[in-house]
Image 1 (cartoon, rainbow, N blue to C red):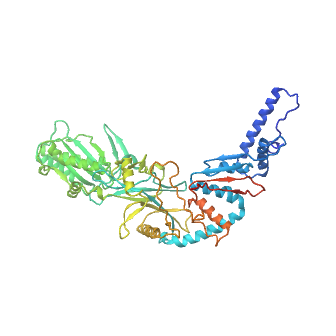
Image 2 (cartoon, rainbow, N blue to C red):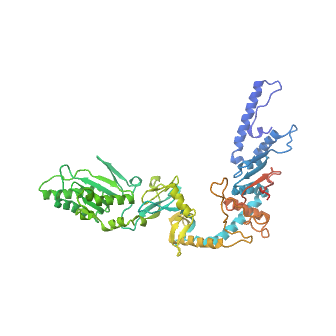
Image 3 (cartoon, rainbow, N blue to C red):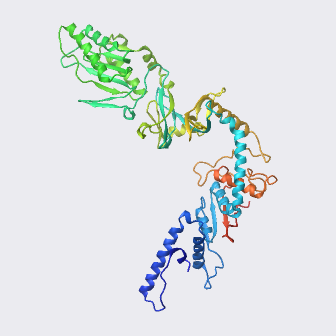
Amino acid sequence: MLLPQVMGKVGQASSLSETQAGRLSHDLELRNALLRFIGDFANWDLAANPRYLEVGRGLVKAAHGDASGMMPEPPLVVDPFAGGGSIPLEALRLGCDAFASDLNPVACLILKVMLEDIPGHGPELADELRKVGAEIKKQAEKELSQYYPPDPDGATPIAYLWARTVRCESPNCGAEIPLMRSFWLCKKPNRLRALRYVVVRNSGTGFQPVNPWKSPDLAARARNLPHLEAPQATYFITFRCRDRIFLANDAARDAAMSAIRHWDDRRIDLDAAVVMPDHVHMMFRIVDGSDLSSILHSIKSFSAKQIGKLAGSRGSVWQDESFDHIIRHETEWEEKLEYVRLNPVTRGLVDSSQDYRWLYVKSHRQDACATGESGSQSQIVFEVFTPKNEKEVAAGTVTRAKATCLACERVLAPDRVRAQLREQRGGADTIFDAKGNRIGGARLLAVVTLKDDKAGRQYRVATDRDYEAAWKAQKSVAKLAKEKLPNGISVIPDEPLPPQGTLGFRVQTLRDDAVGRPLHRPPETRVSHIRQIGFRTLLSIRDFEVYRASSCCFTQPPRRQGCVPSRLEPNRRKN
């Protein structure tokens, strides 16, 4: 009569003479009722419902009892890889014995707390946990406050967001690549925050890499050729003379070059230009907000009039449509600049580009290209912004272990990424010079803060004060690593890891004293046994400490309501 308590009336055999069909119908109805009960009992809201617990344990007893209905020994549920312990916990709820083990020491700690400590001590443990947690929080705030200095506006940093970094190995680049899978900081609908970057170069080239397809302000049009425009883009332009028209004399080429250079530093920032007998190449950026077509129309129409006056004729000199291309990265910029510079030599007009009169290359642009120092000066500068949609947030720099350079968009192969991180011993530490200036290693991307007069978490970019705090923390850890505990073990775990390729959980550190007590557990002389359990529970919740490298637990079913006595035995091997 167990199921009717929660499932309603369930079909029963009417008589001993019931037909086979009737018995099958009854069995099917009973089976469906059991399945419905299991589904309802899986509901978290019914996990501690006394009636469902009574029915569940009664069904287990009925299934495993003897002819008299007694259950001399509860069934044993074995889970050799228990993880967080959901299976043995459910077994305990149903009145079974449970045997659980796991190779992961954190999982073993969670198992011990969840299956032994919490059921065995009940609400008293929860109260003690709150007290211990408050004490640890107070002590941690006292010791760590210097590493979380308040902002000038009163905001308190609560988290630092870091990224490992590698260097771009493309020739003439060498920019730092922060390894980031996403530039998003917060995706809550009412508080969207993300990082965006700008590539800053101190070489004087003025070039900024722009991917037009990722620009939110991309403008596209098409005639016979496609034409793309984007803010801050550097254009490589080619326009040709009409059929059977050549700039045969020096004056005509002078007029064309004069028209090109007329707008330099006023409407455009001209990197280079060359006037050939039948075509023109240009490299420039627009600085006055004009559109590309108006700039080219002004240059072509003015130069055509001047050339017509010299020739004593009227009419168009240039083809209506020009070829334009947005230069995407530093290496391409250098290639285009070299192409413009060598164009007269390639066409056989001069032996040296310096001898060609109608070639213009800004001196500092040419010096930067020749010395190859432009890319090495690249810096990636981040800012926090509120995106209007996901398209405004750039894709991350890491995909399938490959890293994409933000400065030149070249891809660093996975083996090179691993090699650089190996040289940095994993890359998780920031590298500082003797004065505390960051020179490599992990990069601080953003800081999460809380402020009394603002709701929720706030985000800002990192400052020198944040790196100073990290430098102090690094020195403190280095000093702490030199200290030894009474048994000679370092305060900072320094045991070597198993070699690469070792099966199983790699962090296999057992840090116990001579009597087998965890070193990080409070001394018994100062706190009660319940207090020790509360401390251990806090550690398990935060996954803060490794308790056992390999252990197992054996738990018994509850013997009275509200209490689940059990025991956990470590899997110790005798030497």
